[in-house]
Image (cartoon, rainbow, N blue to C red; front, side, top):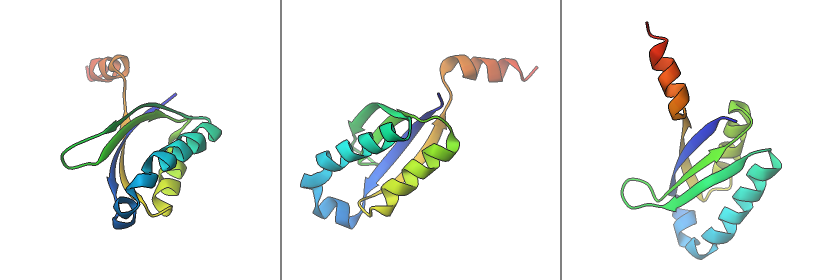
Length: 97
């Protein structure tokens, strides 16, 4: 299953309601699970982003739908990266000839 890395920042609304953040995370995990995906890891971070999550989704369309649904709730903004595991990285580089 494809892997994605979500870099997340709270919106003004999200930070105003920070105490609800753990409940919202649980809701996001359930939403992704219902879409056939799974959170692999989750971190609160310091620096340019407030949170980082690594998750799997069945395909790019579902990953996009998931992040759009998160953003539409108004509490976070996301930057999502498609991640290639080491073996895929090695295969891609080897295919360069």
